[in-house]
Amino acid sequence: MLGAWPLWAVGSALFDAVRRKWRLPTLRLLAFALAWAWIELAGLVAASVFFLSGQGKNLRVHFALQRSWTRALMSALRATVGIRIEVENPGVLLPAPILVFSRHASLADSLVSAYAMGNVAGLQPRYVLKRELMADPCLDIVGHRLPNYFLDRGSNNQSEELRGIAALGHDLGPNDVAVIFPEGTRANPKKRAKVLESMAERSPERAARLAVIEHLLPPKPAGALALLEAAPQADVVIAGHTGFDGLDTFGGMLKRLESGAGVARMWFVRIPRAEVPTDGVIEWLDEQWLALDRAVADHLGQGLNDERKVGP
Image 1: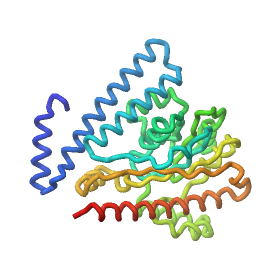
Image 2: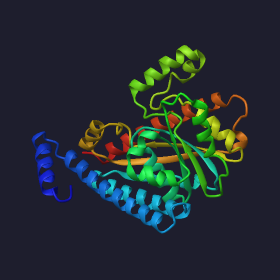
Image 3: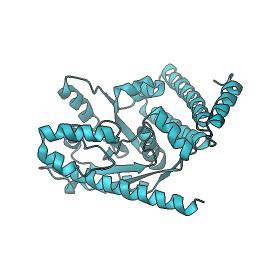
Image 4: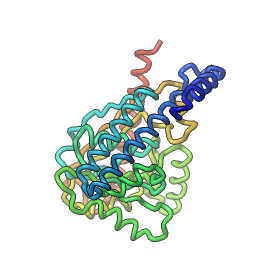
């Protein structure tokens, strides 16, 4: 890509110009892909150096590599795509250990949360990630050296998967964060309708309670419950964000860049462990998700008003 940049840069710019896409979304997305490739290469070289020097199991250097990797990707996003990240209240994450239940809306969710928790708050996040993300070389190699768990969503052995999730909550230290995305997949209207329809057959009462949800998916409670049971001393933090909606597909990315990338915001709400019930935890989780859905709506409305203020 680097050697052929004059070809794809001119070609993609002409392609955008012919379609009257004056923000040049195709060119900017390809520029980010080139930056991503070099950042991946740098991460793999560093991981290889750690392995060859006998540091393959040194968590400290790998968490430092993760912070460098996410910082570089955030800088690349801003320089090429134009997305600027704002973490509104990182102090809520301290003190650790904590369990973070995060919204899932795009391909960038885990990246942005790692930046917020690792680079901004100085913590060591460990993740429940889908196995498909192992296609990313750095996430595969470095992700397996850190205490993450790659979930097989198609597994028939749910108890084994839950044990793997619960293991992330064991022995959490004063700088550790266990992160899970309770929705299980990126939210969009079609998925929301499908999940609610299926839920109505199994649990009509719960489906009715969550039917008003507009921006998120109903949470899947099993993984969150496994973490709560594994780390009874940890407070819970609900993580919300806006600015990445619609970035769950390549087409969605291009469409977003055509209209302007803007600002992505992330915020946190901390719930002391004493306020987390021991009975009725699923109902409690649903209420937190309904509150998060309302907060997302408020943030989206605020962002629209800000755009109107600075617009033509």
